[in-house]
Length: 218
Image (cartoon, rainbow, N blue to C red):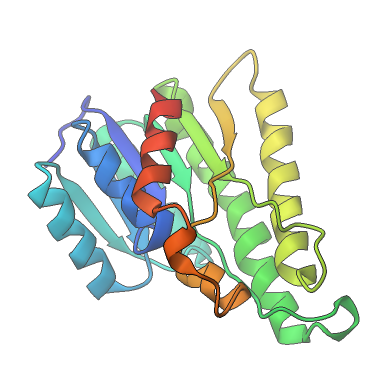
């Protein structure tokens, strides 16, 4: 288990896809991983992979839309470790594809709540932890924003990108460092919903994109 002063990375959305692969790759660098996701079983599977790779992790089953849980997590990180070196935000809600004029209210609300509101709150709560260690936050950029039928998902990703971009400009002289990462297409569950029937063998592995990102963070 990591002690205060050890390198520390928080990954939101760590139970599958790029988040899961990134958790393993970061742990290989002797960085303790705090893995956040809603599904306990999936987190336990990631923990097994991290341990097999010689790394360590703290598992946090949590819904990032739970404001009080967010605060408790960040207070715990501050009290136990004093700050964060890395925050990788991989959590995303992918609403069903639909024409812009036919997006269901429930899909709008869930998309906005998780992808925009919860992300904004995470920035508020996590910034002091990153500042304490001159850390780095990384968010995922998606090229689908603005494409047809991607109204809800694409709009939220564009808003998320704008939010992180503003944060990056505000932090240029004071820190933390804020960077965006655009992964190549990967065979994730989210992409399968958007592109059913696609040849998944032709896509880039999540592991290869996690390795790219770890190189960028270094």
